[in-house]
Amino acid sequence: MIAANHADTARWELHVRGVGHEFWVDPGAGFTPAEQSALVEHLLSLRIPGS
Image 1 (cartoon, one colour):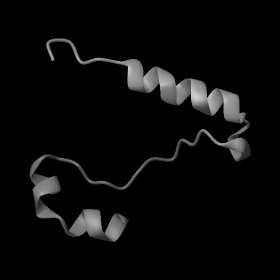
Image 2 (spheres, rainbow, N blue to C red; image 1 turned 135 degrees about the vertical axis):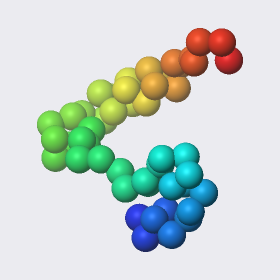
Image 3 (cartoon, rainbow, N blue to C red; image 1 turned 120 degrees about the vertical axis):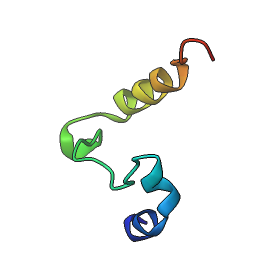
């Protein structure tokens, strides 16, 4: 997926590299499934002002 994102020049024009990040919200990082769900619900509830 990273290679495909890197090859998509339209993403570069938008300054989006599509390489992910080093922060994980999973059991290996100490998060429970309930915490993961709460985070997803929170992120989905956010709205961009003016949209």
